[in-house]
Length: 112
Length: 115
Image (cartoon, helix red, strand yellow):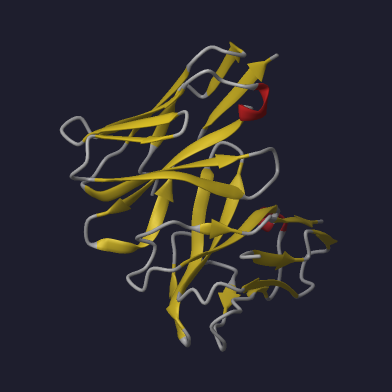
């Protein structure tokens, strides 16, 4: 059962530009998390936003959450070539803390 | 260093030959989980464990077994592997005693090919 759907599936930008990725989900959530995956490697946690929060920042990352639209966005500002990776949203559903349900991810390519 | 360690990282095997993928974490996490990652399907949960001797099925448990005899270890067992189990497997753990409520820490992955 897939909860999160990321959009776009792939994104190519130049260094210094901002990258925005969107995530939509289907059911009520306790929290939404964003993870990063370098090619073929393990996922790394970036940021967690709770259902009662609307915006959160961490360094060059800005995450927003709109529970009325069941959507979230991840903004990476002033992107670098090292930001090239796949980015996944993951949701913990209300009453379902046994798992995070991951989307299919956005592949971000940042060109030097 | 806090980490989740999986072994082997790469494995090619043949149909029906039992294999075990080990997973160990050194963070004293109560929650552990196995995911498989396939192109176009994202990550899907296979099994999870809330604590020692407590395991439960995820979304795609068929063909897999797990055990949790110690807090740090959570091996994934394929009793009779089939080609549709060819995939990239990830073990993950979390500090939260309420399950996956917090940050998941992932291993580096185990790429399995079943011929």
